[in-house]
Length: 140
Image (cartoon, rainbow, N blue to C red; front, side, top):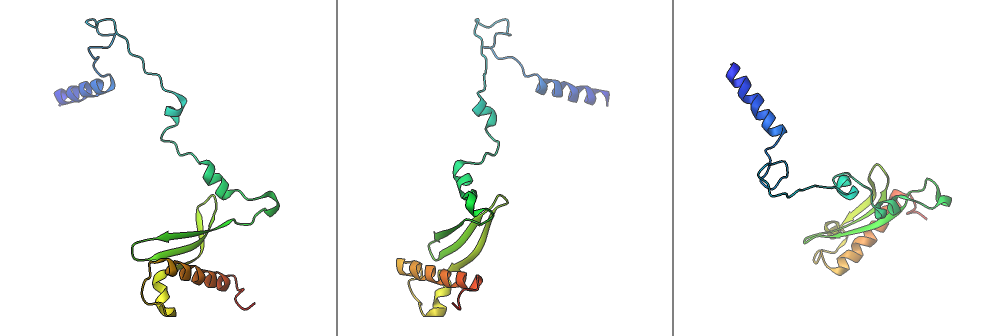
């Protein structure tokens, strides 16, 4: 048991203090070369999560519209579908107000070509109807 404990403690010391390389100046057989590693501030920050200017502009609202969410219209094209969304951004994350999909269009009479330009237009109109219904403005 004592031998195993000595073996593992010796391995831990080797991991903590790596052996010197032949080009390192602390090695007596080196040729006078020294190596120093200096990290810049950007390298120190690497890996930390930083918020970008574009993310700040998505969140910030004009001062005269305090507390009002800033909405944006998002369209995503896939090979088989078109997805449209109304999204507001907050610090906690994106909130989706309403979304509409091109595969819902056959309910309204458009059966073929659900990923082309005209289907994108129709999906946008469908999303507009959904938003009006969500905000209870469809009766006006």
